[in-house]
Image 1: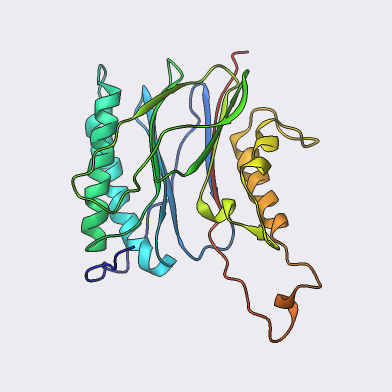
Image 2 (image 1 turned 90 degrees about the vertical axis):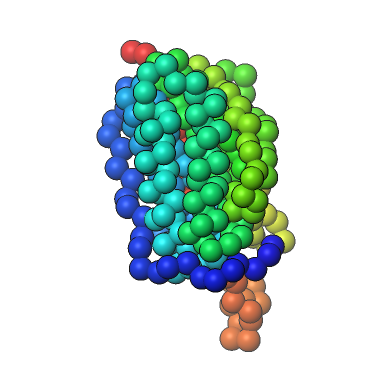
Length: 263
C-alpha cells in the first residue's frame, strides 16, 4: 500500500446511524465494544429505497474518524441527489454514488487510503439490491436455495481516482438474509485457525438454539459474539505469559439485512 500524502484533518467523527423501522426490511449494523480501527457504517431511508455503506478504512480509529465523517457527508448528500427520486436508474446512480465516495475518500485522506467498501441500494417495493463490493468484503447471502458468498468483488476504494465500478443486482425473496462482516471478523484467530466464512454460514442457517428467525439485530449480535468467543486466548497460550507478545485487536463489525415475510 502506498503511503498517504499529508494527513487528514482531525476532530470530526461520523454521526450515528438513525434508521427508523422500514416497511418489509430489517437492517442493522453493529460494532464490537472495542474499536481501534477504521470500520464505519451508515444507512439512510430515501422512501422507495434504502442506501447503506460498510467500509473498513485503513488506519487507527484516531486517523480515520475524520475521514469517515467526510465520506458520510458525501454518502448522504450525493445518495439523496442520485437515488432519492422516483424513476431513477438505480444501477447507474449506484455506480455514480460509489465514484463520488471514492473521490471524497481520496480527498479527505489527502492521498491513497486503502478502504474495502460495500455500498448497496435496496428497493423496498421490489426486494432487489443493487450493490458494489469494492475490495471483496465478505458478504454471505441466504435464501431458499441455501447460503452462499455474494460474487463480484472489485478493486477497493481509496486507491485510484478514475476507477469505475459496475453494480450487481441480487433479488431478496421473503425471509432472505444478507450478512456482511469486515476483515477483523474474518481474520479473528484461535491459534493458527481463522474464523472464516464457514463459521458465518451456520448463523445464517439459524442452527443455534433460540436464534431469532428474522432478526437482523440478533444476527449481528450472534456474529460478533461468535467471533469474540472464537478468539479467546487459551490459558496455556504464550500470550498469557509476562514475556508473551500481546495480540493486537482489530475492529469486529457486522451488518445484516433481512426481508421480512408477509404476515
